[in-house]
Image 1 (spheres, rainbow, N blue to C red):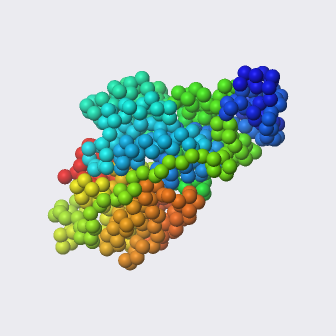
Image 2 (cartoon, helix red, strand yellow):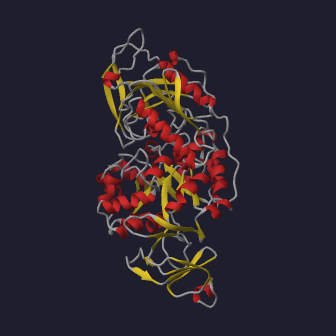
Image 3 (cartoon, rainbow, N blue to C red):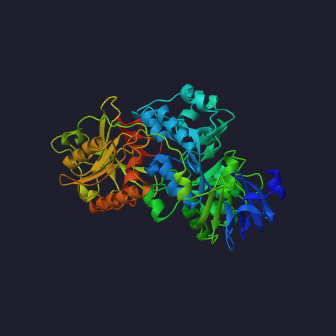
Length: 558
């Protein structure tokens, strides 16, 4: 490496004729980029190389780092996610595999660790801190500190993943304390939606360093001022970029990163991934230097990845070649010195999928969705498009023949969560407003984070058909109407990931979205929106298999 850096020997690879965007000074540096064994060894000079790649007229920036995501939410395996996103410039993905861990436990985390040894992008793993996220849901596994500690020194592991049970931190739940103590001094990722003031002080004091749940500039600014690094999120449902873009300044950018959290292949195909966030932020007025810092250098510093984030000697050769800095569309990508493309993907190893036949739900009938009770006053989940925070609404719904029924004229439709891990067979029902459903049903086993079956609908028979069909296809998404399955996507790996190439998953998602719109659905992403209605750590009203959950009180509504 020293000889190639000094020019005494030809470099393995030389990128010739481009300009390097220096994220320290903001300057554009002229000269070749020399690479030896996947590491950048030379810049700002002329080099000879065994392989020379012409990048004349192009701008070179460091590879992008997604600082928080659940690869399972892309509905494809880590290998297909790699093939889908690496060509768009993502060379590092810091993932929390708590979706599959909630179904399969440690086996799911081991699957991701094994996959990380073969993917072209560098997959870093945060060990899942909240499996399950609370005691108000039934998951397929329960991971304690002792389950996680043996993996903390794995080369792909950074630290502890998002600590979603923020009341457990603030009020010192013993199991939360055990995990925080075990990982003290290592990176601990946060999850604290709407947590402010002294509650936030207590949460940060526990050693939590990063956080992606800020949805307003005011909330994010308080977290920045208290030393947290803010991960600005733009997923398929949670869209916070527009609200937080004003914070992406040259002054703030060392403490700002980018993440997607949950983004499906359809959004990636139609809009992009981190590349979409970069060009959108710049188009909205953010400084290019600040945005590209957030996408790579600041992310690397936030998570202790000192070997990347710059195009400079000694750094991992993660490089995105662009025609235009503002447009941010990759003409070429190198990940660890390898040119991203079909040949590199074909040379990867593979890992056998896990968690098959994981849907163990009881047989469902139309009667399963009846909501008994004599009280007219009824809690209703109010969807806020583009957010996973929901409203806690109260509506008068008069029981008819012992059942509170859907009312499409008021946009009040039935929602149910069905335990599918074979633990207790729980079925909870409630009401939701915001789907715009006029008939039929939508069901999913992508149901954060316990991943039971979630179904929303107007017709009980269609709801039962959708729920039962999920068991037959090993999980996924289903849309039904009039006793027929209109569209479906099978996700047989833990009920979360497809065995198909990402292109086929994209095509199936197009059909599903069309079928949902045919039912009257107005939401851009109804399937992940449905999934988040079951997550009891996001204010204000949610539903699990235990019942409707008042998240502000952190209790199941009796």
